[in-house]
Image (tube, rainbow, N blue to C red; front, side, top):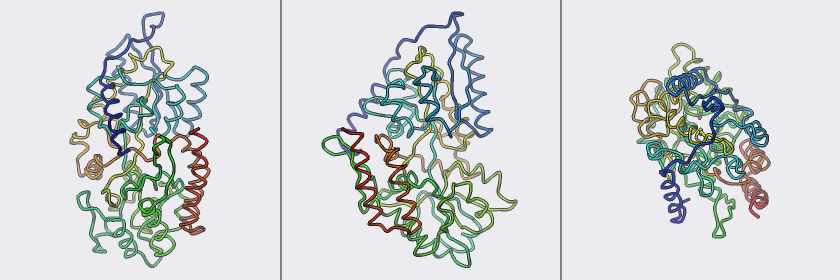
Length: 429
């Protein structure tokens, strides 16, 4: 990703995004265009924000009506695939950038170059556009993102006297390991890692240490390596669980929400979670429980971290691409992007939206998350064909066994690299 060739290609993509829009499809018989907008919003505040924005659009644009359709994160990939193949896909599609590759390469999503206005394309940073760029096309607008952070028991940290990290002076991974060991004892742990799905968390955090895992060769094909930089984060987790006993082994099979009761009960000093988990903590924490958001540890590449933003795409089969792009422009105006971010407790990608005072307040540590926005990068596996199979069949069981202590680092590397490259080769013939 750091080659001059890729930088040139990305510059070309950005330039094309700034181009003029194309013509729309035919109108409905009554002269009114109807667009279906499938949203995956699920929290009440987020659903309310999306529906209110649709209502505001419809009030201002009687000739272009948007119909809100509720989707689900749990089934979106299979549901979209079925609707694409059946010719019944919604015009506007809410998804995540790491789910777009198959749809983009399969021709199901519209290339947004030339459809979007300059205001929108220039407002979102190039590193965010990378997450929705596949080949030379751009197939989604990245609009919401969240860093992985440490949610900490503030009272526990204060009593311990450890140095509390900030985005300007974060912990190193070595310091993080030492501090979690210092905080542990008497049946309590310095950290609880909820790693039911360990792959994306491991790879995304490994960007801070310079770990990439996926490397494109001179022949244009992607291969897997597991070098020293890739090993720092997984070795830290493994050693916290199996050597230092500063991390609870029982949480390795949990999702993030599953760790919160133990966190509130004072069993764990910290839990690495997505930034949006703050909403659950605000709603569920016992009265008087004092918590705070800390940045994830930093490595050789500082606080760099991989993310897969939420995206908005347009179906290739939609006859109303121009009208759909106009709705996206409205939905992602800076003031509206802020409303969507607040509803989801996430960060907007737009630079203007990130300046909003509501996202820079110390209340609920919004400011800590906003300070990390410029460090977020495209997830390492973002555009790798074959990644889902590698993740499900190779990497997930390998990381799970390694973190539990069932296998060592050498066997983990063999599985990820040797078995993993066999998987990727089937997708790159």
